[in-house]
Image (tube, rainbow, N blue to C red; front, side, top):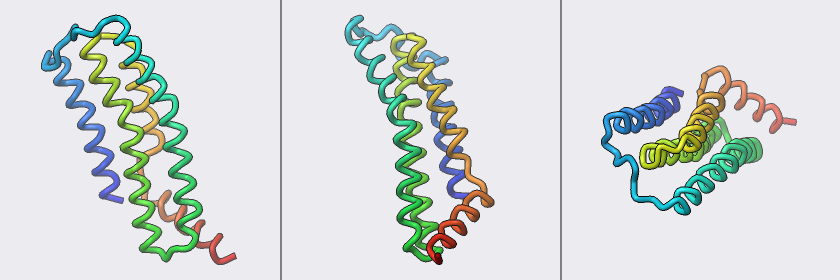
Length: 145
């Protein structure tokens, strides 16, 4: 659980670092994107945000629900950790892209997608020992039935 929290904090810190670097004008504002290119980037980030959030949550649920039933406690914990990392990285990808493209184009749609993605990270990826143990116990009880 401590490792999950460290991974979550590192992802959030990385996004905050990107924002700080963007505010310090490290990224080139007004990048030479044509309006068509900017529109395509905006569509890609919006679709990525809208598709990634439900898929990441459902993929985590499917893989941890079905696979944990046939594993012992240590294997289930390792699998839970692996799928938590996959969920975390897939949810932060649109956030990172949104922040970067915002500072390249100053288009507000990008930062909105980044905020939505970061909200999903905060809502779904914060681990707690109680949630993990209850989840693993529930899976073990279903396995025993």
